[in-house]
Length: 284
Length: 108
Figure 1 (spheres, rainbow over the protein chains, first blue to last red):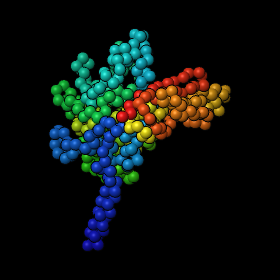
Figure 2 (cartoon, chains in turn green, blue; figure 1 turned 135 degrees about the vertical axis):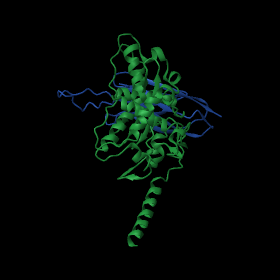
Figure 3 (cartoon, rainbow over the protein chains, first blue to last red; figure 1 turned 90 degrees about the horizontal axis):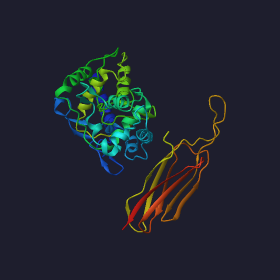
């Protein structure tokens, strides 16, 4: 009896804590007073009832962190975007091309791109992430050295390319030729890794909104990537985040840029279909 | 890298006599001249030493900047706009470069 009572009390305390942590759930994300973001929406059908609605990671953060993303002057990721804008216009490689030689301005040519990646590439016969596509351009159209997958230059460029897609709904294709990659990603999502035997789903599906030690678990959506993290004060790519998560399960992780992470990126992106592209976002 | 790339935010419209908030930021390394490189040689100073904002030719703000100011200097200030016109922002680099950008505003 006493134990049962204690359980009830603990339950009350826990729920009080949880509601305190999510006080900002109803906050609206409007960037620069212009771009209205969808941060909560109906879950995509393929989730088969795992969630009733999906929430952007932004809704799990404190008001202070949320505010950083609402104004580009406060968002530290915009420095990276400025850096990438210079690179976009700079000629590199043997072909005498810059990004802008073929694509023109970022605002015109890249609108909507971030929302549909990772995406099946017919010529290459594989699902490609933004990073893979950027390196394909660099090698084959510019005759330049490819960037390291997780390098600062690469992440800066993905942040720049995301800018004109902000506010558009994430809409990655999971059927057709991409389906087998998507299924591989789904398998990884539900596979327990590491000494702690944790799958992505154990935290981000079964326990979102709960605290894992001091961290407030989100639904693990990727609509804000690349994200500026306050904990390491730089932009982080999706794959780097995956690596961090899997490392925390005390597992040998997949490599950044590996086919496993590409598949997982596609699957996780598809879980967020319908949320607005927020990249580059600010998280803790 | 991206030195000298300015960003400004000025409201597009305002009412006459209204106080508006202007935000400016320029990416710049603001090398203080106090640091040494790996071989112990001093790194020469290169900062933005002056920032000005003008509205229709009239000075709104004129700032002398010193080496203690950190990288990517950010200024936020208020201004009262009596009429439609254009803000012109100018940053002066130690190396002689001048970065400038402008924003129109309509007063109704």
